[in-house]
Amino acid sequence: MADARGMSRRQVGLGALALGGGLAFASLPADPAAAAAPSRGGGRPALRHGSAREAGLLPGPLRQLVTDAEAFLQPSPEHPWYAGAVLLAGRGRTVALHRPIGMAVRYQAYDEETDTGVEFPPDQQIPMAEDTVFDLASVSKLFTSILAVQQIERGRVELEAPVASYLPDFGRAGKQDVTIRQLLTHTSGFPAWIPLYEVPTYEEKVQRVYDEEPASPPGTAYLYSDLNLISLQLVLEHVTGRRLDVLLREEITEPLGMRRTRYNPPASWKPKIAATEDARKPWSGLDRGLVWGEVHDENAYSLGGVAGHAGVFSDAWDLAVLARTLLDGGVCGRRRILRPESVELMFTDFNTAFPGDEHGLGFELYQHWYMGAMATPRTAGHTGFTGTALVLDPTTDSFLVVLGNSVHPVRSWRSGSAPRVAAANQLARAVPVRPARGRTAWFSGMASAATATLALPALDTSSGAARLSCALWWDTEPKADVLVLESSADCGTTWEPVPFTTRRRGGSAEPHPTGTATGWSGRVWHDLTADLPTAPGLVVRWRYTTDRLYVGRGAYVDGLRVERGHRRLFDESRPADATRLRAEGWSREED
Image 1 (cartoon, helix red, strand yellow):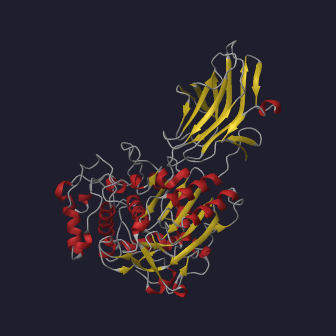
Image 2 (cartoon, rainbow, N blue to C red):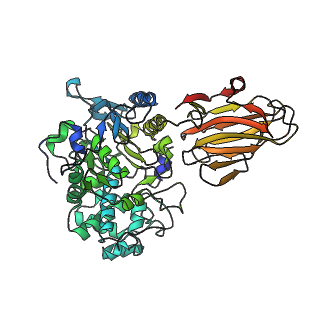
């Protein structure tokens, strides 16, 4: 389901390389590790449970991740964001956090007159468990995208080929030039959403897609649309001769041992599935009552539960297995589902013409509105309308799964993506930054709507030729959150920016003529130099300012030194000098 009709997904949260031209399980596996084991013997499991330290993560932020998530079980601000959730976070092959909170099934109905949920009797409510299965909603699009890239590998589909070359009827209404790539990157021009559930037969629904006119010329705009992945489903089923649910099982879930992932779960799974919405008009397109064990999305439901844009059910561990497989270049144990170069396409931005709407093949990239401080130009993920999210960060080899039932009992109770952002911020914070020198470095923190300053004592630079040097590490929300080097010659009454130059170790020099740093710097240390103004009592400081919405990983400063020729005016490594630094909002942090 599109998160909002006609709006970009980011707003709701307030060259291309072409390669090559349902079964019901009687029971769920008791051991989640079984889901990670390769189908053919000899390979080691993709994942294991372990401690934060074993994962190379800091335990404190992971504990805070759970605390933050539990806060959204309470009114935030008027209603809970979700009735419950399952949280999973890991790095490398270690899952360091796997925690259920709240209830999987709490409400039997929604009372619109009082805007309250009608709860089941306590003995009929079901708490969340580690293996609770969720309707993934639009996270399903990732599976369809992976299946499409598999067919690109095999030469049955070409990335830049017109969709109409596979489905001639698709070319009606001005869509003759829409390509497979444009479906995968939401640049086809399709409108965000149409009510296919109002069309009586499956065949007529397909014809409605074929007849739909683009809202913009193909390739000229980004517009997130479920119709892109529904169309891709039709292509896949045509070129393979298999239904999408069969493709999912045979090409992804069976090879990876993902036994809790499928379309149309059987009735025997219902006690392990999180309930969704009391679906009734006018807020739902269909009158269905409590949706529990069936797909929530109206269009996917009308398509028989199997759709390219929604309909997949899964649990946190299975999604972690998928995340680990992609971070490992498409392989799990001895089973490979994608080539490394294909995975690279999923983490490569094809939408450079549409800044802010970065997109790989199927995966969204660099979206702070739900990836929080995990967001980098290569961080890949997706969200689902029911309250789900998957985030993969190749830079730190970390992954996050947040599965919530946020439309239970009704979709209007939640807005925005705050729980996803909070969880991603804490996982990003849990990845330690090793100081450039010694054991500690100055850290700006990650608070939103905040200003942090780190000031050197007043120095006499009146003789000229004074130079500041230090090591600098920064990763901020681009343009919105800014790190500034500035100086004052009048005891802090007025401040002027100090231009500086940074050099990534082994890289070329990068000038910062405005004295600012913002956005992505590679999450590595840079050597910084700056020529300081002349004044008898010059004060130099770092100032880090964030807006109220999202933050990056923050900024670190280490090894501050001011020299004039061979004379050191200030050296942070000297204890007497270090005590003269004035930090407001910055803290001294160990590796």
